[in-house]
Image 1 (cartoon, rainbow, N blue to C red):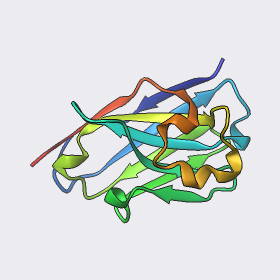
Image 2: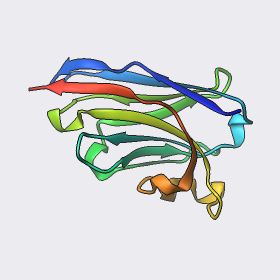
Image 3: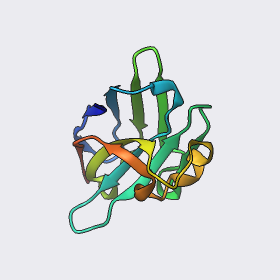
Length: 131
């Protein structure tokens, strides 16, 4: 059974930094497309960043230059470094892995705006940024 467990969220002031982690188990990590999404209260879930098995990455425009997605395959862990945080970054952040039926790992980088493309989800970790 695939399990994704996020950690590293917290409360920071505007301009601060956090590093989120997602520990993965239950599947062949090296072949998977993985991503971070976020959801603020009253808003739809939105993509933040994706990374494919070839390490190709893609980011939402709102976080380009501030957030960095990376992975440690030996540790089966996905990371998201959040820098220059803004109050509008406040949200629950979710780790996602694997592609749903009808989608392909080959096009992983194009799925940054598509929550429907991902099969497995973690429970989320809260990030709160105060001004």
